[in-house]
Image 1 (cartoon, rainbow, N blue to C red):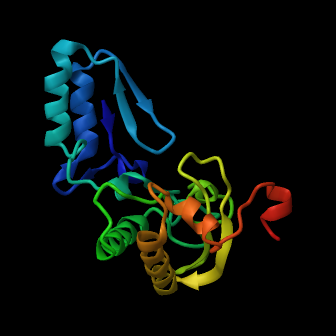
Image 2 (image 1 turned 180 degrees about the horizontal axis):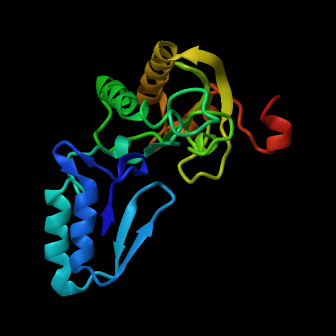
Length: 215
């Protein structure tokens, strides 16, 4: 059973007491809890007799929510400000509203609800949010300013390349609006966003990082 934990932050939020929910699951669950590389939580080894009970606890506490979009599930950020002393821009606190804005852009261009872009934000070049393995990656440069990287793939096996440097959030949203508009109308059948940006010549593919990343 997979539980979506936005930004991996297990707290009790208004109308969404995630931490309490996990504690309640732990009282009846005899298996494992496993943290995923995408900041979520797997309740593993659930006994058949406990499945319905655990799922009800998860839903009652907001740990399972059918209204969460595929775009939100495929977006993540590092912790950044105010926790990390290396951070130069917001990431974790910035991501939820940013994803909402990206969802609006996808809807504006008529994309289906299950279509999404691998989106990641990191507060500095150290890249704990793995922006360098995303179809759209934001790397913090200063408060409210980021480098915009494009061209990763859904499998996380291709490094994206910098498309715009040190731009504001408004500029980022304008770029995403334009790019998603092109993706919606010009893509090939079942072509993912990152693959589209390369095939269409928007960004060059990084095949060999030490050669292509800065070229």
